[in-house]
Length: 545
Image (cartoon, rainbow, N blue to C red):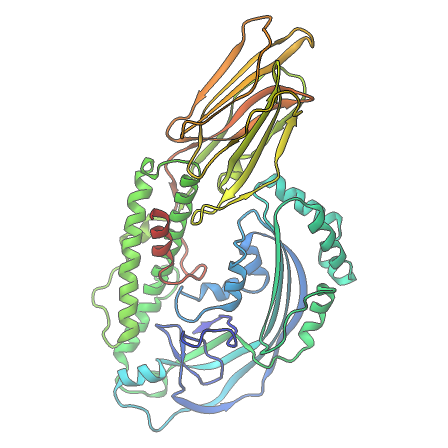
């Protein structure tokens, strides 16, 4: 049985479970944790497990995990037990599906396998007592080593921003070739300054007790030397185990049966642990969709299937949590007639939203623009602030977008997008509060006799809290004006604006999201990313608080 899991034992909490760190360590399958050894033996000579240092450009967290040989290890962690320090380090960045990540990954590994092994002579005769002290298995092969991870994360929220970042990186020779030639560090410093998209950087060393990462200088160059260093507190990369009953431990049949039920056997039978992890994935997807709904003021009660299935998933997750806790406490009590949770068959929900451009009003002059694209919805990009300027007609409009933290309500604003000119009268901005949304827009166009083309005469915005913004307009029209009013339906949200502009706003319309009940696909693959056992329950309880 193979467990590929990384953790830095120098950084693991002393009051929590830890992973095996030595050959012949005991292992508790149900708690995913190290126990004291019940065997003794001799090892084979250690072998080189590999060493390397590389730079990669990744899109989203999953690619980051894959590049650092992380996905397989993550899939073996059922979401509880010992904490993976590298996973926690990466997850703190809150990398989204559209984020662009420059990753430096350097590592060194060594492998040691068992040669001879035998049971110790003074083991408890009672199988439960033996399990409590020594687990149900022992380590037969261990891969340890060191790791250095450095991440520059650019939080692109749309495909357009993503293309901007990757284009800049490519033009600046930030690539595997640039890493090899030594030009990457200066280029990274320049790109971070030049790109207005929010970014962050951090790096961490694993496998050393007192080796801090460099605080200045050429980090890229230093990373190339990292694999030559000898770790003094090596992390566990992977380990294989064998079971005590294979060595002749008597009366272990009940624990063996519980283990088989717990682990299952393949995708068609993922076992209790696999079903539990699958439910966590489903629950996380439900929470993500509910967070998107809340970001745009769409009442989740409009998606009754998501609401009901989400509650079923939460209940089944709690039930499996209790089952696993009981097995951890006493695996000699094998659950009888256990059946997979019904909600595992629901599949994985995905956001179902149509993004359309509506109500383009005005003429054909000016350069076309569209402030926000369809992929911004999943990233929860919202309209936060609108400013207008005008006199006889609409001279300019400025919009600020951002992402609001669903827990704290704190807004991370993006740079303001401006069209036309801010000349003429400028009324106060319409600054949207948390939970406030634009639910009415009216755009009026007219013929400009002086310029001999249509223009936007006026725009009116109203919100769910009764606030409004009206652009100045005091010039008579040569012909009857043509207003276009839009009132948000319960499942609609104003995302932003599109149109055309030069020195003034020639045409203006709305980018609108229309939500439909979430799509549900086939049941998800089990054993995906690691989560704490209470993660799904906590996410939903925080969201509904």
